[in-house]
Amino acid sequence: MKCKKLIPEIQNYIDLVRSGTIEVCKEQLQLMDFVEEHFEEENLFVDETQLHKYLDLQKYFPFKLYEWEVFCFVLHNCTYKKIGILRFPDLFILVGRGAGKNGYLSFEDFCLISDVNTIKDYNISICANSEEQARTSFDDVYNVLEANEAKLKSHFKWNKEVIKNLRTGSELKFRTSNFKTKDGGREGKIDFDEVHGYENYKVINVFKTGLGKKANPRMTFITTNGDVRGGVLDDMLASALNILKGAEDDNGTLAFICRLDSEKEVDIPLMWDKANPTLHYNEELRIQIHKEYVDYKKDSINNSAFMTKRMNIPKGDKDVEVTDWENILATNQEFPPELEGVTCVAGIDYAKTTDFVCAGLLFLYKDKYYWKSHTWICSKCKDLGRIKAPLKEWEEKGLLTFLDEKYVEVSPSIPAEWLAEQGKLYNITTLGMDNYRYTLLAKALREVGFDTDKGGVNNIKLTRPSNQMLMSPVINSLFANHNIAWSNNPLMRWYTNNTCIKPEPHDNTSYGKIEPKSRKTDGFMAMVSAFCASENLEDSGLVVPIDLNLDCYTY
Image (cartoon, rainbow, N blue to C red):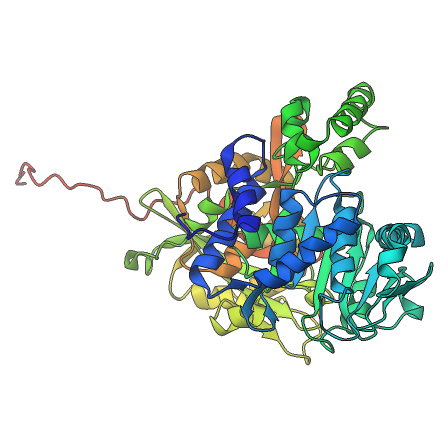
């Protein structure tokens, strides 16, 4: 993308990433495109006077910010979409251990409680799961004040618990995860350190409620990867990846991600720069990481933290996207009008009655598969609070239906009746569905005309993981060749982007969820069930030529 020249503090890092002098992960390249695009399309401006005053405060610190840190600092703290309104008030940083994320946070917080930030009482809380971790950046700032006491004592007062600016009243404190005894205050900024340790949103939600009472509210999240799966980090990382590839609105978030592109790259030391943007400046750190790598290769199980913390690739994490996002976008192909009245197969995913349910139809037309589906959501689904997708917007598009409070579940009759209505428009020959959910749906399906005798041996195909293994390479190939289409359906794109390929014995693969609670896969799995039932599905687009040169016989 061609973009107008940005200020050096931003452009320098963009040029470094694009120069090829160091290895960078794909998310860094996506971020450069993201930043250039928003400066090109939006009327953004950087308060350079404010920026230079902030950067001048480096004179009190025992280190200078690296290009990547300056880049993040400018965009997070000095880039505005209008006067007084920050463009990227939320910063998410995922970098390998040793990159200096806590040093960055210390400098940022010192700046924002300094006289340069003229907002009165701009309080900052640093939150973490342990006091030791919460104190890390706080103690950095404390030590800066101690080392520069003669120059700074007229501006600040400090002790081991709180640091306060005498002129603005802004305070820096540290907090722990004991959220029951901590209420959200009147903070201007909240920091969350080592997000990978948060199993739920209780701490984050408590402190977020204090934001908005001061101008320019901010949040900064810093972390390496970790071992808690299904927690806050998985959600945030999934959202950040979607933002970078354009699958989700950024909503004010700047996502700075550094990690290996694949687990195999760990054996190429030059690739370690992908996970640690500071590594090419620090030979001593590189030597230390190499020592840990040798230990990891000797015993990968007991040294798994090397991959998780240093490379941001959790060892044994086999969550691999079903296909590239570009292939998912390629599903936006209109349905040919010739599909009306043709033969198709149906698929249904009915994992929980109190969750999401999806049913759909699969057509084959001129070597391309078309998928038409609908989703029903129980309003009492406990996972709804975790889901960031615009479900209500998709309901307005007719892609899904929320069942109101009078429904305690998605009754089996609801998807069954939808299939019956579709049966008036198309010739549904077979229904594919999970073998384990058959008993839930059998009665409702029988009532709308499906043959459920003898376990559904006639027009119901009960699918098992082995069926998925057979169809997985077929589906993957169809995506790669852009031969799966469902028109402009963001719900199906979301479902597919939430699904991962799971390795199975003997080099087989099946499908699973990238994250079990906030990233639903029901629509994709319903389509997989339909594919498993499509063995005898005829291509409705095949035209059989008729030989008009027929001999005539008279009897």
